[in-house]
Image (tube, rainbow, N blue to C red; front, side, top):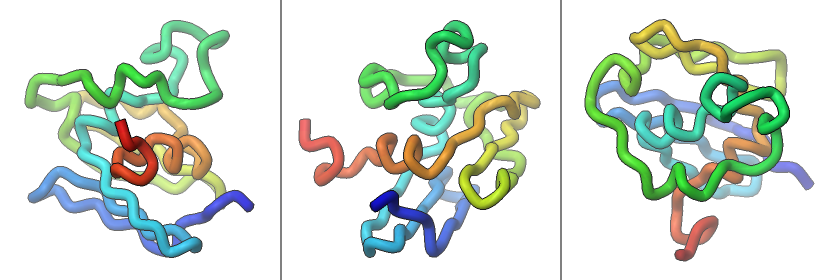
Length: 112
């Protein structure tokens, strides 16, 4: 079974995106993690590196505060994904449900 969101909330005050999944799991993503884990070809280093699971390095990296991690908008892509639009105009990443669930930073999903 591939979980699908039942609720998606972006909070600009806390800089977090919260997704409640249909299996009752809740994922809370910092905007910084979402940007670090951007799955677009530009951020992943080419088309051949797109797809699959998030690079484990995104969970320990750091981005400086600025437009790159300030969410301007979030757009649904069909019934399978989201595209964040960042204040620096980057809007290339399509985060499908599988990728977002794999990006969940909680201790259940990433115990290490």
